[in-house]
Amino acid sequence: MSDRTVVQLSNVFLKSDRGFEVFKDLNFELQAERSAIITGAAGSGKSLLVELLIGRRFADSGSVEVLGQLLRPRKKRLIKRIRRQIGGVGGIFGLVPSFTVAENITFPLVLAAERKRVQKERLFKMLTEFSLLKQAGTYPDRLTRVEHTLVQLARATVGNQPLVIIDEPLAGLDQKTYQRIYDYMVKLALSGRSMIILSAESLPTDFPNTSRYTIENGMLV
Amino acid sequence: MIRINHILKEFFRNLYRNPGTAFGGFLSMALLFVLFDLFWIAAGTSDRFYDELLSDLKMEVFISEGVSDSSLAATRQAVASIPGIRETEYISKSDARRELETLVGIDLLIGYDTVNPLPRSYIVSFEPEYLTIDGLTGIEGRVLGVGGVSHVYYSRSWLEKAEDAKRVISEVGIALGVVILLALLISSANNMRLMTRARAVGFEQMRLQGAGGVFLAFPFLIEGLIISVFSAGVGWLVIFYFKDRVDFTRVEIIYPSVDQILLFCAGAAVVGVVSGYLGIRRLLRF
View 1 (cartoon, rainbow over the protein chains, first blue to last red):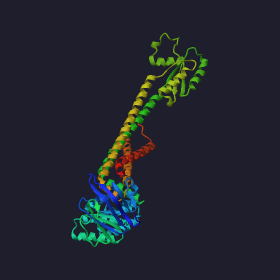
View 2: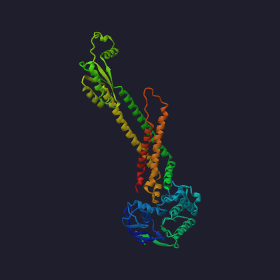
View 3: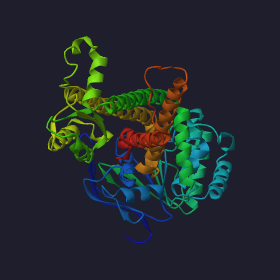
View 4: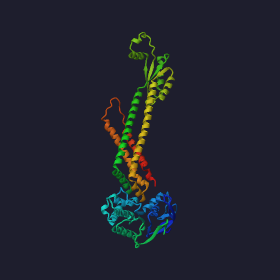
């Protein structure tokens, strides 16, 4: 694994809870400042891949390295540290229902023990950037789906997280909203972050700095 | 510092978001604490009552007829020097007769005008710490060993019954205390569990962001501590409110001292933290 490698999965085998073999010798590498768009049908294992990357699930065999660290069970501290460096949007990543929009966005900064002043500055920047100023004090149950996604995107980037994982970001969106979210993902890709985008649908081909993969028969091709 | 702010904020958020659970928890704990306080007061009062009864307990030490009046001072000195004996009072034959006359009248003493068969004796009182069966048995043995003492008398069977009663009260007190403590722990832990369940989705999300078990659990530990101390304090306020409104003319009610109450509240704080931990321990699993 080179210094620039952000994620590396080597010969990963994984069975689902029901004993079905989801990944069979899965290999994948993502370099810094690059993005990967991974498409696959429903049930192909996209969400399991996310769980592998954040240490919520572990491979039956093979290795999963994220941000230079090998993820293994019982490495709780390491996994916590890794999770703090990953911004998550969609899929298993949701908002904390008892937090306001502002609190949800700044939560990674709270975990990083950032100063109050820094938190306020970054929060204001994010709220402005995502047009969420009016919703700052709102709880998630009052937000629209798009606003949910925007808040998650803001949270995923507020701490300058080096890796952002986006699970099904554009599914079921109307054209206007689709374009808004897509434009922001492009902006993120150009900002130098590494991104993994998982989607059931194929995304436009003009996405910058990107490698494209498909999950087929438990392997990435 | 930011984290501490967040943790404190989370504590108030728990109360704000689940006021019913928090209030229910506070109320049930306060009631249990009041029950505990009442039993504590009852135990203290009965203890004092028992001590006062025992303080009247005296032993009669009878002197052999053969001991001359001139040797009495030495005998008295020997008895008084036995550890545990506080005072000795000499009762002469004539004092004994006067006492008997007071008790039974002079009619029964007709024919004993010149003869007084009543023995001389000492009435012995004791230091409080020796007022037990074991203490008095020891003193009895040593008194009987003093030359010139023929026999002794004290209410041994009464003392045995009183000691039994005290032991039973103490055992029931301990058992009740343990039951109340368990009830407190379970009640408080269940409240915490309800609150954590109500916020399970949020906790999972926080975990995915990298929050640790301790970070998530800390507000609940604080909550357990504060609710417990607050309940204990309110319990005592209720007791002292009614203290001035209820009169007991026959029995003096013994209340714990301020130091004891503060210590009790500190104990309640520990119970609160432990119950908080029991309530959220599943959160600590990764």
